[in-house]
Image (cartoon, rainbow, N blue to C red; front, side, top):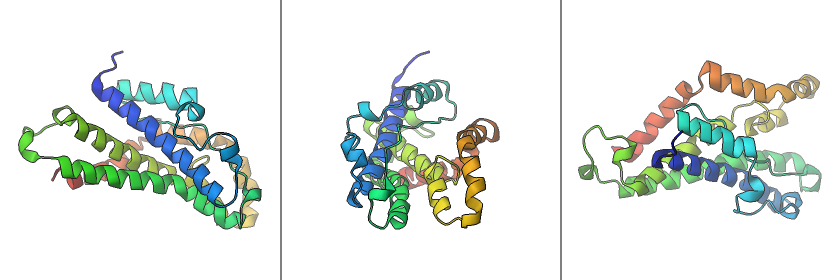
Length: 214
């Protein structure tokens, strides 16, 4: 196993995007009056408190090295709805905070890469390695954030989309939903490694490539 420059870029941008995603949940929860994440020391850009050994290091690194679909997560930021003003409304916004943050990071990175890209400086049919280092990092960071935003909006526990879906779910559905929640991660792994969720993300990647490089 060799950690080349491209692998390190994918790994580093993925870990950064996942951590910023989690921090955003805690920041918005704090804005609504919940200090749980702040008191736990989770409103920091220091990656150490957020790292989950399996989800933040092992799986992303293996995916980057072997060019396989990547499943990654950080330690969930603790949130206590009972400390929030208007808890139901607040939890909707808190759940959206992560994907929205990823979309904003994607937009800023894509605009920066587009501004820096000079088509006369690359060969026809260039790949990622044929780009200047700064544009490689910006493009991969934009792509990782785009995928994280879309993926996290799926209504499958423990993804953010499931929390949003749950807020609008009829109350009579909740008992069955609660029984399903512990198996959500298994469904996610099945989607990634058997169904091949990457093919559904491919059109979004194509759009991003056209936006930046054409």
